[in-house]
Image 1 (spheres, rainbow, N blue to C red):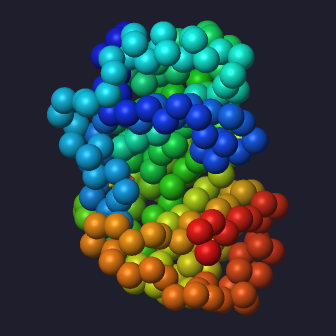
Image 2: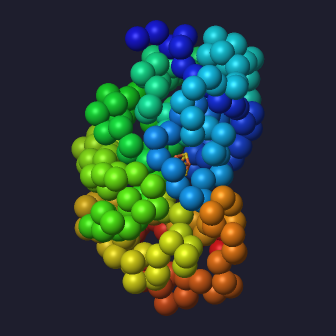
Length: 233
Ligand code: SF4
């Protein structure tokens, strides 16, 4: 598949937070089949016409930044929705850039195909992996938990540098569920985990109360992983 058809929904020219330790540009791929109520990129959910530059233009833009950037991160939306993703990753790598990927594991088969082309992945895990009802309620899509479990398997099988991350808020689930989520990840071999406090967006209207999650919960989370980070708390 040619990279030419990659549907680019937008670009972030320079970020130090989307790929740990690297100065990156982010390519947002258009389309996501899930409908999380707190989504900060709802304009990227529809797969239809992309509003960003064509891939050829994006690649030329990246080429002009070689030497200034370490990496490019393919994000979304859900980048694995796009059959041109793998070829686009190869073309970006040919510029000498490291390749990062953000995914929710939504399309496990395609995720397995593209993981060998990535250097690092940030995998979103929405809810405890043993709680299909909660997972599906958060994503708004029946059966989404099974895809997430397969996506995690794909990442761990690929033995790639990774971070699992969860968006959390007491309106989504309580601290006991957060600990269950983390224990499930640690048991399966995840080494690095980040918890991001959801900011109000879409259906999520209130900020999380100060001090949530509690220091005790954060201490337990920190003890489960080689690397743990709280973001936005
Ligand atoms: S998976 Fe990500 S891009 Fe898709 S709806 Fe949820 S938050 Fe938005």
